[in-house]
Length: 277
Image 1 (cartoon, rainbow, N blue to C red):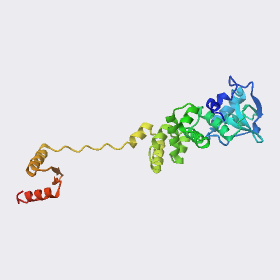
Image 2 (image 1 turned 135 degrees about the horizontal axis):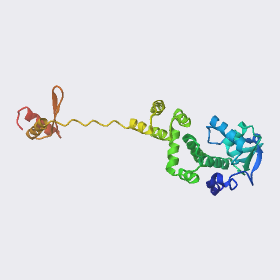
Image 3 (image 1 turned 120 degrees about the horizontal axis):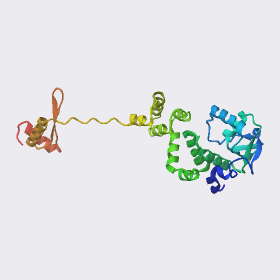
Image 4 (image 1 turned 60 degrees about the horizontal axis):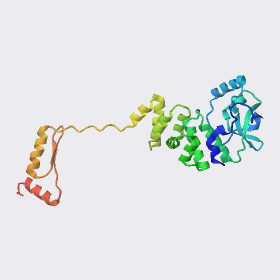
């Protein structure tokens, strides 16, 4: 498989102009099966119905892309259009046939085509990156180069897959944004991630609100000592020849006297006991 071809994505497989024309065949809908390696899992039924109505009225603006497979063809790109064609009751769909010889090549083309679209959920996008890494052995840098994104974008997306499946499902359903998910991925406690994700949904927290809730509470500044106490500490320190701290409470308090050695402890004891130095 040539790397250069993968970098071009879907545009390398479609005729110029994107419409049905030269190089495009009419293939029976029933002869095409979905790609089992397809990263996209969420297909809105309402959106498919709208697309089906559009296909009936306007036809296909862009063909699907398929590869020969046993008993027919397997989809590389355009599963949403293919599903909508079934709903519309169409017998055939316009298709470009690409000779993808291996599962790896079909996977790469399907992933890159999907990643170049805008309608993948953040979790689907992350799964696509993971498949490129595990199935094709690509590094984060190579993945970023293939799909035209920064390496940090790929790395941040992959972090989302460390979230509990219940949290990933909320992202897939559009109840949590990618920003919420990235913030939650910074936590190490799965139970805390789930709890906060549910609160984000139930209470309508913004990403900023979630970040605010995760910030550690500001430490309260210790009240400064009054001048009388500070003066008493200084006098005792000068008298004893060591550091002295006075801590007042609502009732009473304590005096702390520091010593650095056993000999100094004996000296302080004798001084306080009135036995001389």
